[in-house]
Image 1 (cartoon, helix red, strand yellow):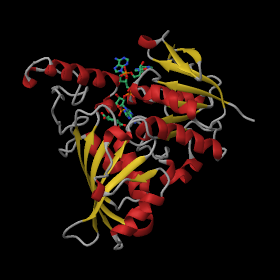
Image 2: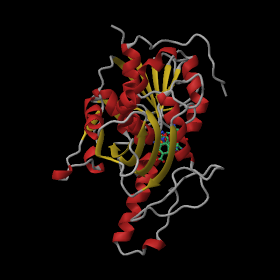
Image 3: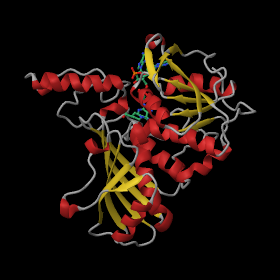
Image 4: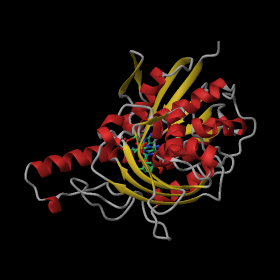
Length: 358
Ligand code: 25A
Ligand code: L14
């Protein structure tokens, strides 16, 4: 039987370390794993199935003999190196935003559109974490009742911004507990490493994730809009998002309002969610049962609760969607795509390179 050589790019990061864990648990037949990161991390040791792997510096030559390459080291790293991986004969599963809107690149959540893998050209993109968990929760409803519009507000964990944002949050929380005034705390990363000003997240809520675009939405919000349309293969679905960072380390929560095309009862909507792979209905308000971030950490599923009718709009439904942003939102969705590629016989070199080598 075929055994794959797998590369993980950004292996020491918040997402990369989870990718190794998900590969360990995976049904994929794995021959070797190559641990790749920046020069800064080269020489560090990571563990895979009890073996020690030495982290190597990522170069254009890193992908010789590699069948599957998982990328999560930021958009600029994927832009430069993913085409070299494809050229070397690997299939790339990319976690960053760089290739998501490229027409040659399928944007895949396996429960929703695994069929889109069939026409891959060497790179498959993973949607943004906030989009992925919303897609697994909404697809069962969309399939039966149609989806007219989505209005979402997110409550996002800091780990989405990488290990350095986790460290910054813990430092601020400790300083605050030690008595420092909340307005005196310093910040270098959040709300967005790429923006000019930085604000403390300790005991705060920041209505900015990523930088602002010229329509006054942030990139994170516009990613949710565009990626929902591409993943559902439906440009007509209306999507507006407000993305907010809260001082939670892992697991994103979302308040989602939808309008379906066909009228459905709440019982029918709940049954559709409960029957769908990858989602868990956690909704029993009589016993105060609803999804919570702390319970979702370390789990691959997406949890849905507080499902209820809008008070005014006949086809309007509200719900609360929670999932581990580093697992279904990133590492697990990537490994799950690799498993789907394997099951469909799609782990193969690409004949014509359709990406630019830089
Ligand atoms: O632009 P994008 O694609 O939208 O991505 C923006 C951010 O979103 C995160 C991603 O964090 C990035 O910060 N992200 C992307 N997809 C995500 C998803 N689905 C997602 N988050 C959640 N869910 P990341 O942790 O995946 O990777 C980027 C990290 O790079 C590190 N870094 C920052 N500045 C750096 C730097 N590394 C080296 N030099 C610098 N000057 C940083 O955090 C950042 O968050 P880290 O320390 O956790 O490093 C993660 C791993 O990436 C390797 N790496 C970084 N640069 C390179 C590299 N490897 C090879 N070549 C490089 N040039 C690091 O070594 C580490 O292993
Ligand atoms: O586009 O900072 O996949 O929480 C997901 C995590 C963007 C940044 C993406 C964060 C990233 C985001």
